[in-house]
Amino acid sequence: MNTRLTILAASIFVMGATQVTLAADAPTSGHPGTPEPELRYKGAPSSMTGEEAQEVLTPKAPALSENEFSRAKQIYFERCAGCHGVLRKGATGKPLTPDLTLPRGTDYLKVFISYGTPGGMPNWGTSGILSDKEIDIMARFLQHEPPTPPEYGMAEMKATWKVKVPPSQQVPRPRAVA
Image 1 (tube, helix red, strand yellow):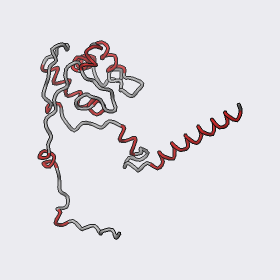
Image 2 (cartoon, helix red, strand yellow):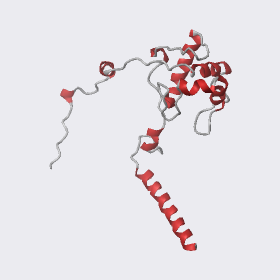
Image 3 (cartoon, helix red, strand yellow):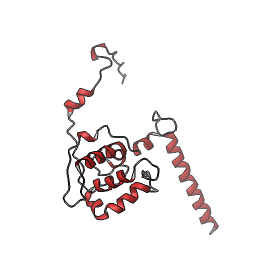
Image 4 (cartoon, one colour):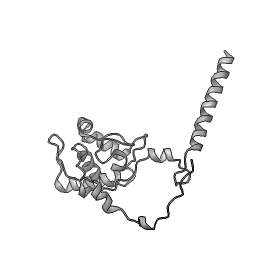
């Protein structure tokens, strides 16, 4: 019996040491103390603004005025889209699509928005970041279909490029010898 416990303890130690080694070997991310794999896991802010998204109202969802919908879009794209995704299908945060949020209801959603979760959802209400009115608006907003983002094709991407060194002035890289 002691032999089995010793082997088990040694196995756990080796597995833990392997994980530490893998984390230490991870490429640097440009953020001191944060390995690249962890950075990829974290949500990132959305570069899209709420005004660019097309509004979609869901018939079975609680009513929202046009001003409330606009405010909710703004809050969502500033605070939520980085984790839950622009289309609310989930990323580092869970999906917030109407098929999941409508059955839960407004009161249920208000609790999560206000108090957060141990899994990483911020406590937007108890921290004072969102007011009770904004939390109510967000809980109702999440029961509607997500606004449709605008198309962002190659032409739009190229329009944002800033050429620092024109290709004609770039120094060619030396070729590797095989």
